[in-house]
Length: 264
Image (cartoon, rainbow, N blue to C red; front, side, top):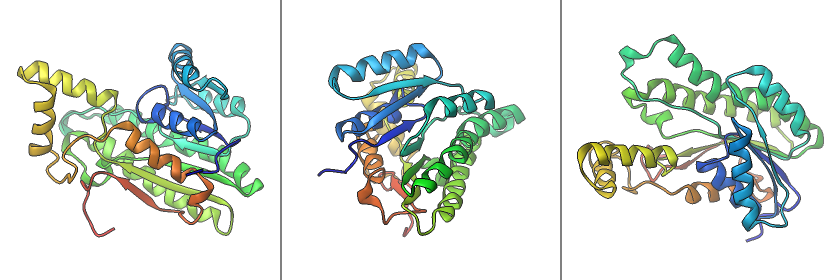
């Protein structure tokens, strides 16, 4: 299927690894130009180099920024120029007991996970509305609904992203711009890989056993009963970036393997 993304330019925050990097690859396959982002120039150079091996004719470059700092976000926006697609993917998380989460623990995750998308959207949404076409996607998480008690700060930021996304969608009425949220379930990102390895080493078990036990004991609501791979998530993201998804706006699209349940 041709997703009509040739000559579209996409910026993906936090895209040197994981879902962001897989989404970059998926968009490049559809003929889009991609601007990567990471905290360091070294991480961007490595990601661009890896992609350039496969996509020799594509326009790929990256701009570093640490989303913890507002001035770096503004510099990033100024350097990007015009884009058609904004994917608010950057995020951090850390598991901890609620009783050990001080204010800085909450504030840092909110600043990076939520305010990054707020600041980028505030800059790029008016430009999209002016030309009457654009796509903004917020990458949330199943934790927005499941709210594991050891990840409450992260869950709060991911539900906050949904609220921001739905509100921004109201500003696009009768235009060619859409704003949606993607809600992935447990996904085999680099962080998940590290989690499985650490748990396997700690317990003296295989990663496969640890994964099976995670879904048996922790993520019991999952119908998939395995981690989704990053390409499964990226393929869906790419569709909602396309002109073919023009009738979907203000929505939450679940790629959660059924883990959050509900009728909608």
